[in-house]
Amino acid sequence: MWGHIPVFVAALASLVIGPLAVMEACCAAGSSYTVSKVSRPQPGIHVVPGDVVRYTVTITHTGDESVADASYTDDVSDDLDGARWNDDLEVSSGVTAFNGGVLAWAGDLEVGDVVTVTYSVTVTDAYVGEGV
Image: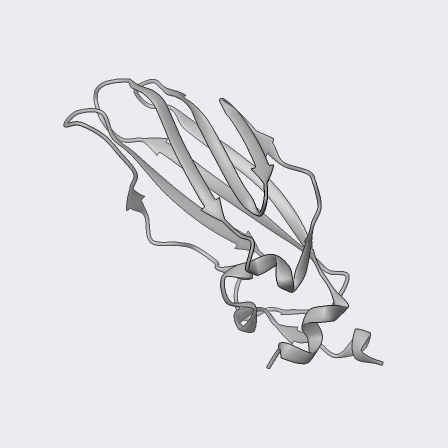
């Protein structure tokens, strides 16, 4: 019965966050990078249990000097109350890990580098009663 009631993506709080404001992530003058995160479907789209929400994190070098040991973490543990991690984490450069509800990326960034981290979650029945 509950499996057919749509859940409004925006009601999933940060589970489906859509584009984030780009934020400075690091560094000394001349060696900086930004991080942005988008989801598909975007906020405003209805999802039902079983639907897959895909995320792309983009890490963009914005300075004129290399960045050694750049990193990014995202605690998504609260978001997983309404979704299941699909264990499909991929990265274009550097290394990633997912442990205890925390997504982590680390790597070196050369001038002009753009790194993408992708993963997905599946909306679960458990979240339906909390939707809009």
